[in-house]
Amino acid sequence: MPRPFQRDFHVFGEGVYIRVIFVVLNSAVNRLKVYVFMKKKTKRILIITAVSVAVIAAVAGTVLGIMFCGGGHQHFMRTVRARAATCTEDGNSAYYHCEDCGKYFADMLGESEISPEDAVIPATGHDMEYVQAREPSCTQAGEEAHWQCLNCGKAFADEGASEEIASEGLVIPAEGHDMDDGTETVAAQCGVPGEMTYSCLTCGYTETSTLPALEHVFDRAASDGAYHWTECSLCGAERENSRGMHDFVLNGAAEECACGAHIAYAEGLQYAYADGGYAVTGAGDFEGGFLFIPPEYDDGEHGVRPVTAVADEAFMNRPDIVIVRLPDSVAQVGDRAFFMCAGAAFVTFGAGVEDIGDAAFYGCSLADIALPAALAHIGEQAFGECPLVSAAFARPDGWTDGFGAPANFGDAAAAAALLSDADGPAFDRA
Ligand SMILES: [Zn+2]
Ligand SMILES: [Zn+2]
Ligand SMILES: [Zn+2]
Ligand SMILES: [Zn+2]
Ligand SMILES: [Zn+2]
Image 1: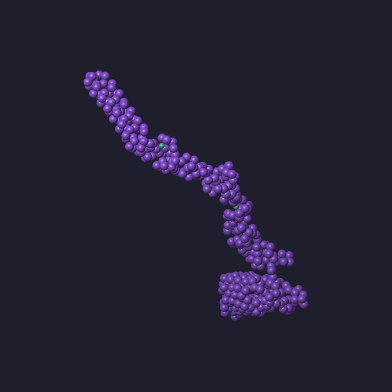
Image 2: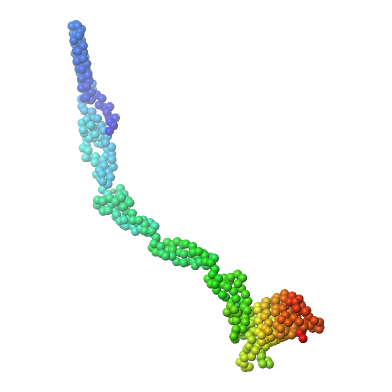
């Protein structure tokens, strides 16, 4: 402890006064030792001098001591600083202590003496509050129930503060997510990735992961009325270059393609009975697309009879017809029977076709035709305005045009040019 500045008041205190006397007496003794070796007269003078100095010093010290110290005690003060009380330890107000006399004072000048107990500020004690437990979540830590002092902030296991708990001891660790096995929220498709979603069973937090895209599996045969192809059994996509037209052949009683498809004859057509057979006279309820004319019909009156003809203008102006197939039983195709069926790109003539009427296929989209051996008459402009590329005749010989000139149908391309002439004549075969 450094000495306080009050020390200055004690320069002329009792202690110094006595010390001055001691110094003077000591000096006198030393003088006596020198004196032993001196002459008598000199000795006498020195003795008188020494005694005089000692007397003068004693008188002066006493006078000075009384003058400056009033003859009393001057305190040698030490400040005891103020200290605040805590929850558990006493504090004190500032006071002063003289180390020389051992007394305590409330003031620096030593006018108000106290006992040290008077300066004590007692410990405040904890101000406890109960803190409820906080449950941990998946991601956040919880906290144990405890008592906490509002003053010092310390945590305790009990209200009596007998057991302090360090802050780490209060922590209840976060539990972490409890993820489920996942749900396929977006199914993977051919070429398109899917998504799995995983959810926390506790809090509902979700995470996703990507499911790899699928590859096509081209292992399924598919067909419609006219075509067969291969498709993906997962998504139904058609395999490139797998499409082909059915090749219907008679298999027992039914016409069937090697792909397994049976021919689907057009339904709802209109018929008329004549001469032991039926002629198709109109489209009736036909909905367009593939016009496969059946080989036989039963009108409920004349019984099952072959379909032998397509009547004049039966399907005129039906651009929704795509494919025409005439069974072997049909011998005659009437005038303008398929006139301006602009969507008709394919026609199959049955083996029995003998007569194709005027403008029967005028304005259709036919490019390639194959004409049967039985054919003997082709009407005027029967294929006029068709984009014919080839016309293959089973019997190309013996044809003449309507003026009696021979017509050469031996070359399919040349025959196509002749037949598609918009102003072409009729042709007959002897
Ligand atoms: Zn004192
Ligand atoms: Zn406290
Ligand atoms: Zn969770
Ligand atoms: Zn696919
Ligand atoms: Zn097929």
